[in-house]
Image 1: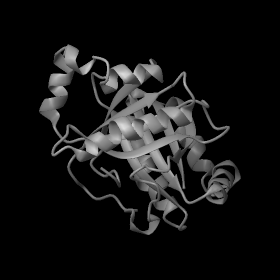
Image 2: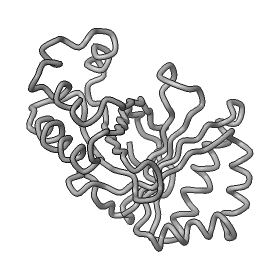
Image 3: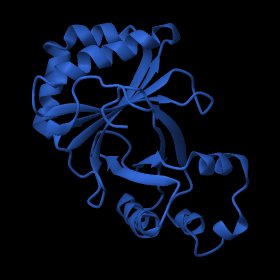
Length: 232
């Protein structure tokens, strides 16, 4: 499985039109086949970063499915759609991701992904992206043993890790890995944002301290799903 991750810098007065283009055209167009589906459509939460940044994640069964999608956008049924959507945004940055071997979302049953908009509650995600100075394989392995497994063993947690991905070879930064984490405890998130991290959580032996052996460059984005996003 491949994941097409795109960050769209949308023109402010075209935000609704851009959303409609994905909801009413992109999503049903992918549904005409069985090898690609839109998974997430998210806004970067207001007050947490640049304005009018939207994130879409599209699942592709394999490389052949990606090639078919490329041809549809470049010279096929989606060409006119792509030209029109380009006029609704300033820029877009895309990359292909592959799940790591221990990701909770290694495969997606595309037949079960909704292909028609259905209203639901909004969800908040924390998307963490890290650029390690160590080997990316070692960084991902550290995540598994020192972050994912301890969190999974907890009775309750602020976050639920739903997907762990890295950039596919040749499609973006070589050393990059991404956590897609659903926020389960919003009051805990507020405490994280408004208080300093206690020293005991930064001492030797803790995740925050030991992670510095692998990376000291990373970012967190707060993403909020729209009311019709297939996954939320």
